[in-house]
Image (cartoon, rainbow, N blue to C red; front, top):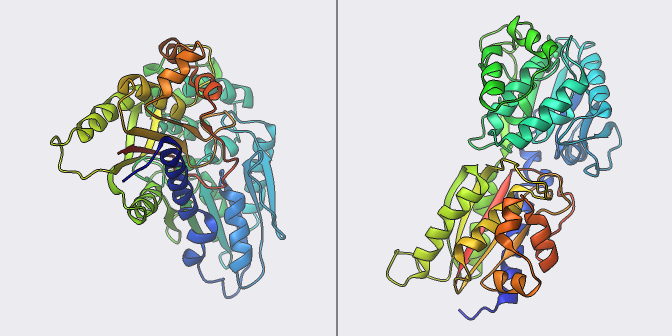
Length: 425
């Protein structure tokens, strides 16, 4: 197949677009809507980067009356008629998220056994449902959240802490809704798609403990205010456990996940005559270390007799890498992965790559991710950019911005974590 650099980059961006479209609420949510209650009312509650788009999809397909409140990240809203949409801060929570969460608990407290709560949850909900437990302040949560995000801790560990410092997460929202029935629809942004980890499981019982949360804080050296430590050591932050009363009538369904995005990406590749190989939908680890492993694989595929994989091919993976922030630059885990990959490939011929977050935001920057190719380091050198120094400063955003190789999509209003694709021609 004859494909120049421009064609390769266009193919990779088209592949990413197909993957994102496949996990949008308009496509994924309608088949999973429950029947309206026979007697009671339907209340919609939700949180996450996809929450507003999910609420919009509910409104378009629901047969009957609706009311409700969802909270999403700033810039991720969608036009709704009967469900109120509030925007708040992510990844570090703010007062808007705190106030929205408090209002949700108040709405939940006015329900009967005849009512239905449709809970729309997606990645980002942990920060957006920012209602501190008694004795814990929003400022405490903000400081701990910032430190955890820089620590390189995996999302399950971060959310373990978040659950035990919250008045609404870790199953507490579902208990507040009792005796109403709660149906939770999830867009998964966590490797493995554990429903209780997505957005810190506001409607799911939680098997983790305050002791687990304390262990995470110790392992990653997170400064812990005395009030927070006392809250955890006393057991006051304990979450409802599996088997606890109040969850019996509830149900949960993951309606979109990384595997769905990867399947769509693979179909896009096949339609273009390119062989796809899906490595995994649940890759975790330090972004730059994962990149080194993928570079080795790409080089092996590029050798004619190394692997039984016909070229051209595209190597696909999903999941969520982490970045331990030691520098002062502008990063994002996908940009960091790509810069590490480019350095490891060192201009290897015929290998192009894209790495993007499906929510359109790479960490806290304005890009979804970036693309790279055989000419990346050569072009960077011509501009006087030292890729290795920028990587050590966690400044991959600056590197790819200077090259014009950032991928900017804006808010996609879905979130199934990262998609990485290595095209080997």
